[in-house]
Length: 108
Image (cartoon, rainbow, N blue to C red; front, side, top):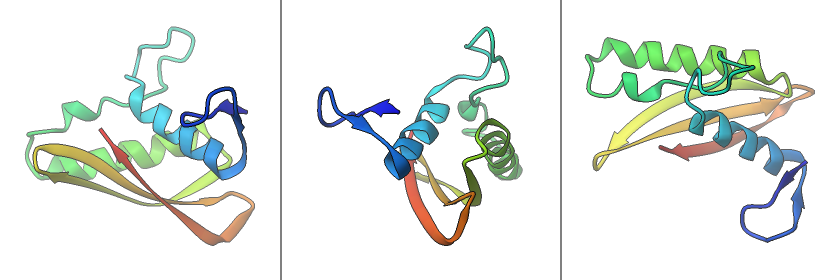
């Protein structure tokens, strides 16, 4: 269980907990956790590079989330760069329920 980010001293569970976990992966810099050096992303290494690096970014996100968390499956990853801000649109499904797709945008 995770703590709510909007209501103090409130636990979140289910899909909201997964949303928080996914957002936390994006806030973690790869190599910053000594016991889990593979956890996290180096997203800003892909910013301001040639268009081919976008595919590498999508691949890193898809593979990373699949390796770190087995509770969901990534369906789609779409990086967007608007008004000088990078965000990642992510569509995912619960591992035990592939009928509902959950959409999430992660601002970076």
